[in-house]
Length: 393
Image 1 (spheres, rainbow, N blue to C red):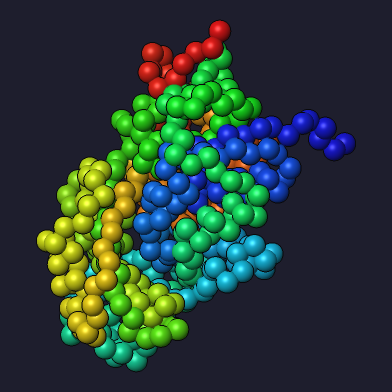
Image 2 (tube, rainbow, N blue to C red):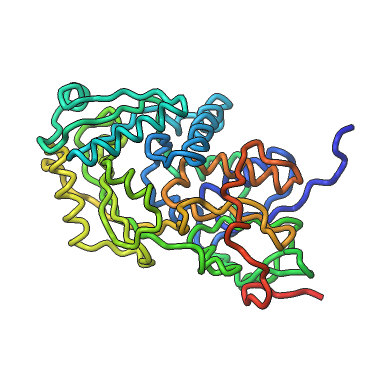
């Protein structure tokens, strides 16, 4: 028999890519959706990202598996004419500059091969044929041909438009509203909003709720945009990603700040170059010392960049956890609350996939993916006297 239960009203906190994808899938199923954001759509990590829909960069295990499924979902959304012209397949080139880094990308190739992902090992000569102009320090590389790219704020805008949802801007959530052990809405400066289900997808701003400040780690990243090296097409066949970027993904709890170089050729002919990984930093300012360090490394890897001018620098704050995995799933103690946060640098890749799973949970269904490894239960304890919610008698 068909399910005769009424569709819930779902309130989504956060108008980044995860919140937009959640709204899209809920709206497509027939549910009522309200999306609110403390600032504006894509104002957080979604708008300060490199757009990589990449399997090459993922840790082996659940993140690599989910990234492959997420990339397939992007392709399906293009086929369904939802993300037409917004997602494009392009190869990722991992590169190594010393023997230790060669070993890192060789290990990544083994893990990718184990997942059935196509790869191609490239010695320096082979790599130079595919990416002319590389610096003398680059020894070897690994091509992952099926990766892709999507600009986060464009995807967010498209998904919200397709959902026919206009987010409530400049509407911060002051606290969650509870009736017993069930979340029934939120308090905002403009008043109380009630809903059947609440989704917390606010990225780093999720830290203010439910003790998440004890398990979420902010990580600032500074990025650089250059002028055009070419007009109307990308100046490189795909992004150049350092082995140090992989190493940083494998050690998520590292407290030191570092630079993990990625040179991303944009379709405009510009380059997006990043990024610093500044653990525990919450300001969104860029500084000349860090920008200079990134540029120095970038020119060493790809000397033609010395001809380009820097036209913009910006920074974003990514949220991660001590185990480096996102927090995605139903709250273990509070009914009516679903969490989808702490995506680190993987939000653009995983956003639509996570949004689809959250929508199914909100509708009382099971996720189509196995997301057990991301469950909030691995961190969160009973709320007790937490001050981020109010009780309704």
